[in-house]
Amino acid sequence: MPAEKQLIQQLQVARDEYGFWTHPAWPDDGDECVLPFSWFGDHGLEYCVLEMENDGPEELNAEWFDTGGDYDCTAWQPSKPTGEGWFIFSIHDTEDGPVCVWVRHKVQP
Image (tube, rainbow, N blue to C red):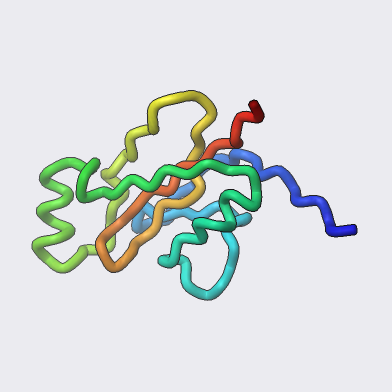
């Protein structure tokens, strides 16, 4: 019988000096920048990926992208997706700039 997957719980977000934070349940495959899309579904989670480039303050985006990334996105407060139950699962850098991965538990029909 397969082991039952543990329900992912919301945790207090404690961003580091660069504005990044990742939930300890994030699957560690050695590459945090690769989003584990199938993993979310396997763990009963919906996800929403929000890019700082489309959500962050204009001045912060100008600083980040004009300088090739100054590696400090602490001024970005990611917008919460529409609907109930969303919580931050990760704020991290990618090749295309910082992203915030929001998750929530899938509602059973």
